[in-house]
Length: 69
Image 1 (cartoon, rainbow, N blue to C red):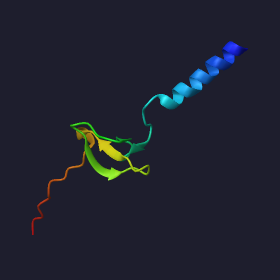
Image 2: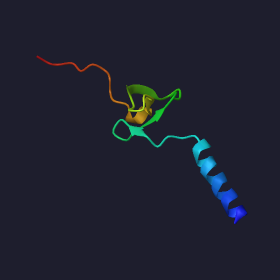
Image 3: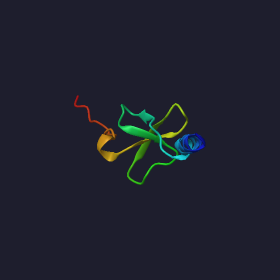
């Protein structure tokens, strides 16, 4: 019984220590993190206050559109 309780306590503590966020953003294509990698861009903030990091293939086209009149 002692071994079981010790194992259970270790598993509970390790689940709190393991880093990683499952919080998604930007139409589920971005991940909420404290810092983004080099090729990721920030467009919005997550509800938790972290940065919404979006990979290049999911980044919106930010070039201005020309309107023909």
